[in-house]
Image (cartoon, rainbow, N blue to C red; front, top):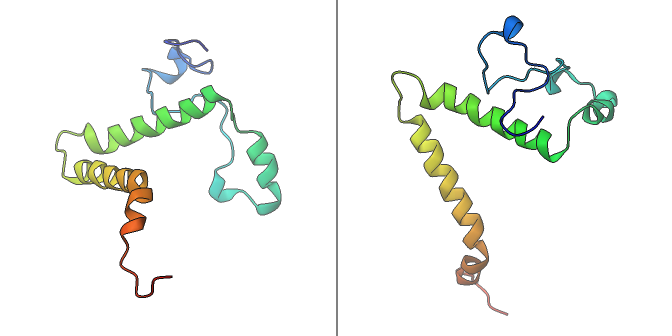
Length: 108
């Protein structure tokens, strides 16, 4: 699959209009239904290439968009989610600078 093309499993006659939040490949067992002994085989069937991982993130982003950002009446939830995500991201970025300013009871 090259940039700008539909996935290989997509057939407009069968699937209808293209939905970027849907996986058009062969259906597999959900992670919640995988037994512990089958976990390595299940992980082996995942597409762990750069394109497969990017496609998974893209589908997750579009699912979030369809659920929270694109309904007719959007609530406050997506804006709070983005704000909390940004707070966690920037806290992780600045943790190295902030850990030196801790209030500790005993100094060595």
